[in-house]
Amino acid sequence: MVRKRIRILYNLICIAMITVGILLFNPNISIATADTTSTEKTPEKTPTYIQQKNQSPDGIGKIYMGREIAKFVVYKKADWFQRSSREKEENPDQVIALLNLKPNYVVADIGTGLGYFTFRLAPLLPQGKVLAVDIQNQMLDKITALAKNQKITNIETVLGVPTSPNLPGNTVDLALIVNTYHEFAYPQEMIQGIIKSLKPGGKVVLVEYRGENFFIPIQRLHKMTQEQITKEMQSVGLIWRETEEILPSQHYMVFQKPDVTATSSS
Ligand SMILES: C[S@@+](CC[C@H](N)C(=O)[O-])C[C@H]1O[C@@H](n2cnc3c(N)ncnc32)[C@H](O)[C@@H]1O
Image 1 (cartoon, rainbow, N blue to C red):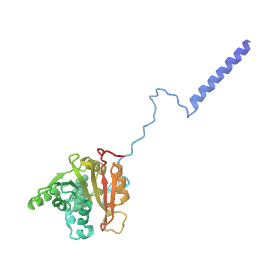
Image 2: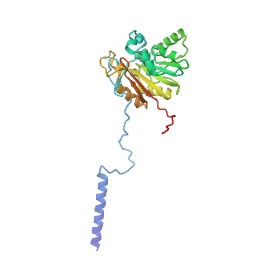
Image 3: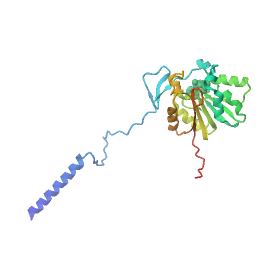
Image 4: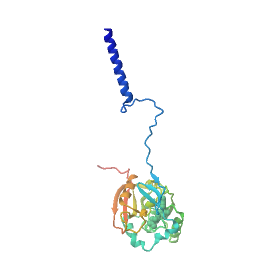
């Protein structure tokens, strides 16, 4: 009888030891303890921008969503924006027609340069205005002087910074960005700032030289593909609405800020 009890006790001890062994050494089973020496790290967030050591001749060496950001065109070289061949190369009248403007619209011309589009927009907005945004004050001074000279009263210049257009929230019907988006040093922050400035349902129109076409004589990083533009706009919550391929060398793409105030009838 005593022997039997000893054997049962022995068996129980064996089972207990095997169980403890399994718990301690099985990698699939973890025992919750207050382990202050753990070296396990929380996964690191992918950086928005990656700065490379080398940069392309027309780039700043900074990568955003797989593309290198282009150098921006400095004021000294801005005469190029006004070149006489530009009308034939870009058909700005066609761009303006595609915009479907209403007379009371507030339009932000982001990266206005010397106002190539600002001065074409202003007469079409008799009850509205153009907000001419740039990070180079010299460009804005030229626009102010020309607007004064031509007695145009519905152009307001706005000095932006590389991370923000410095526009008031919920005031803009349409943001036009011509040949400029690819040279934003902080595209994500810029486009988020532009979205904030838009009224609900407001639109962002991008006009960019076609990156898919090697033969368009524009520096590589100053062109963009439809795919890249769409990827970047959708990543900040904009909704793709329209792409037109009727300009000689540029994509014309329209994105919309979601209208959270709109009520769905279905
Ligand atoms: C290639 S020019 C285009 C000018 C004009 N849109 C046109 O079609 O003639 C780009 C302009 O964008 C401006 N720019 C660059 N980064 C900017 C930013 N983050 N915010 C506002 N303007 C910017 C530059 O100073 C330059 O005047």
